[in-house]
Length: 489
Image (cartoon, rainbow, N blue to C red):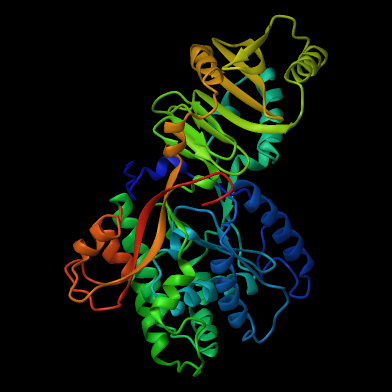
């Protein structure tokens, strides 16, 4: 059985959100002018779906929405129709877009241990959106090298890459996530836990949720507060102390939770993935496998991979080259696409010296185009492949220094249908729930359930000590490796 460690390199799947909207702040916009928030949030939400994807787990989605709407009902003023979504993100994170779009990652949910903790996180994000806090920091794309390579033709290819990843490249090269000021963070904490208490939840649970997230990040990465919720939410002991002190002044309303028992709460989370989500395909070292598309690709070794609903790709560690694959349409002839592209390049750039080749790639009809461009002392290469498989047309775009042309061709010609062994590689670690037996040790339960998570992490996500003795019927979250089958598990 393939072993998948929870601590798989997060760097191999750095996921970047494309949020195309203006900077919002109570200091910049009139209080009554909410249409900007709504328009910006709507556009940003489209890019979240395209670039990150949402989790397909109706039970968990419905549960999160119920918690969120209960909190929203306690707002003194509500200018937006709030929506709550689970983003398909490995890292523990949560964020809010203008206009009431609230997101929580599956990576965050798996470490939560009570409904109150989730309410604390959602309440915090609701306040960020409700108070129209600014979005200030721009972060670089996973493919910065493409934008830095000089040359006119490279610029033309940028347009094609932008189309392939379903966003303008100038926008896709940046990640806009909230880097809130300390004032805004404390404001979201203060009014967030007040909202939580009004809705009948424990306001102190936010402090526990933040501590859980911090512990998870440190355990997975080996570093404190690496890429996580705290990239856009500064986490300090001072902040936890303030939450603790503020919580003492609040008395939660007496209301029933949607999940009164811990077993019910865990059941609402069951089915979420730890680490890579095989529904979107998986990386195994430099190989990528996708079960629903029945395809595999081999990228150059030691390149950094990225994978989202729109495209899969990899870039050379020093930023000298990049390769991306995507689906450009159904029933499009590869040779006609190549001819149209060649015509465009001739007309727009006067290109006459190029390579054009009809070919078969592991039994699939394909067409490869390549051209070199001299820019100063450098020679850059662009290699593009169109390939038809079972009614879908795939496109590979590779660009970088001429020295990487062999890597481009090797990746292009590696495209193939999965064999039976490779289909077994498309697997993921799924959150499952078990009932402990009398005086059962964690190690015993782990073996009995075929858990693949490290014991330390298993203890963390369940909120107890690794050496704890379990009681009869005690619910325990664990992770089991399960092969993904096309169309779902």
